[in-house]
Every structure is written in C-alpha cells, then in structure tokens.
Image 1 (cartoon, rainbow, N blue to C red):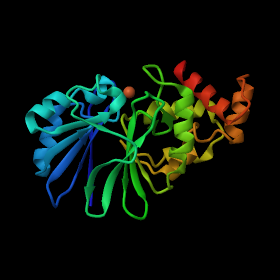
Image 2 (cartoon, rainbow, N blue to C red):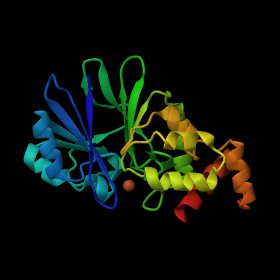
Image 3 (tube, rainbow, N blue to C red):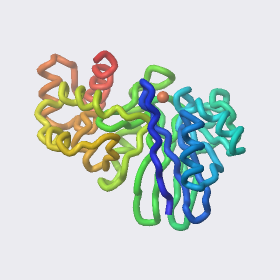
Length: 258
Ligand SMILES: [Fe+2]
C-alpha cells in the first residue's frame, strides 16, 4: 500500500510537503517540496529513496525544494505542461488520468484541477474500489478554497470544486498544500454563523488535523452554498447573490478582502 507522511514547515505560509512511499519497494515521491533538507531527513529515517518530485502547481512555495532535492536524489521532477517554463528542474509533464505512482493495488492518479492557477494538478490516492485521499495543493483547503490572485480564475475554481471535489466520497482524506485551519474557521464563522456542526467539530480538532471530505462538506462554506445559514447571512450582509455560482464567487471575493 501507499504510505503518507505529512511534513509541516513552520514558515508564515504554513506549507505542507507530503512524502508518499512504499515500505515494500522503498520508493518515495515528494509532493510540493518546500524544505529539501527536512524532506531528506525524513526520507532517511523512513529508509526510502525519493524517485520523483510531484508539483501540484508552479508557485514558488510549492517548488522551492525542487532543485536541491533533485540534486541530492536524482529524482525526476513532474508538473503540469502549462507550467513547464515556471517549475524549476521539470523533467516530465503530467496530464489528467496519468498514474504518478502505484504500489500493488493502490495508485496516485492525476487530476487536472484549474482555478488557483491554470496549471494545477491534484493527486488522487485510490484503490480499485474507492478514492482514499486527495492531495489538493492550493485548490481545496480545510474549510476553504484557494485564492485566484496569481494566475487563476474564480469561475474555473468554481467548476473544479463543484464538478470534481464535491464528488469525492465522504471517507476520502484531504491533504492540502497549507495548514489554514485557524483562519478558515474564523472566516466560516463570519459567513456561516448558524453551522452547529462546526462548533461541535472544533472541540475535537487536533493540531494539523487530517480531515475527511464528509466533515469538509459540513464545515466548508464553499461547499455549503445552498444552506440557509450561508444564504441568509450573505443576504443580511447585502451581498448580491442569485445562483449557486454567484454564492461561490461572492464567498471567494469576501475571503480575498477579509
Ligand atoms: Fe499557490
């Protein structure tokens, strides 16, 4: 099976790198390397060899460890073809449906998930029966979604969230590119004040909690567009909302200025 180690870097950006690996073959892949030295330390402790670097997208805080890690391990660097001129050390392009890594019955399948940028991939951890987890980069966070300031578009993000992330099974684990729990929960309180589940969930929250999509669907205001808690609150704030998309776009704009 595919094992997963989250590596948190204590920078203001609160980045996560993930090491995905197989104990049996000793092979590993680093998703979005931030601090190469700490990734190397962890891979040595695990006794695995890093064969590849998987970049969800081109932003520097997701690729800054590429060159040092490549130099040290000779790993192959993978990313979206639209970002081939922006990802340091890129060797190979990935596209929708590619298999980035597989171990026995499990694999990491590539999804093309535009919105945060137009060169954004997500990596879906699955077995033949179901989706076990998703590495969402800066597309979906705990209780929030990515911004669209640097090369993205909120309409494309809406399509991606609505057509792909909302279809994930409730048991699917979410592995985002940053730990934004705290700020996103505060924003959720602001726009979704009558969500009792959130208050209940907060009391069980541990540090760097890995959540399931089932909980996210009940926590994340960007998933709760059709609830009266969100709708009434936006009307109370005199936000112009009409259809489902407009609620998403309004929430994204409010989060940008919050
Ligand atoms: Fe980003």
